[in-house]
Amino acid sequence: MSIGFKIKKVRELRNYAQEYMAEKLVMSQAGYSKIERDEVDVNFNKLQQIADTLNIDVTKLIGFDEKNVFVNHGQLNLW
Image 1 (spheres, rainbow, N blue to C red):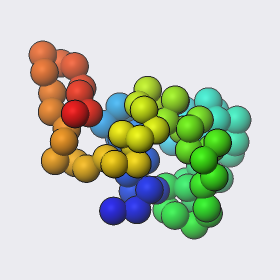
Image 2: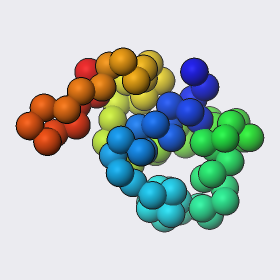
Image 3: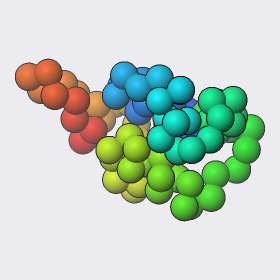
Image 4: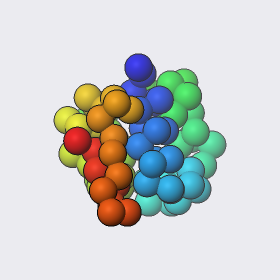
């Protein structure tokens, strides 16, 4: 599973729009979309910013697997 796919899945689980992510990361929506499509390389600093915006530890984002997601009383838990 690529990092762009993981970012997209966590974003969708958080119910965030690409526009929201782009605004928080101070970039265009088109540029952010390229990250999710793995059309650009993401350096660690940008990956950390994305993880912070998604409210997830960067190591959990890197290791994200859809099988590790569960909902507990309306609260989304990633592990």
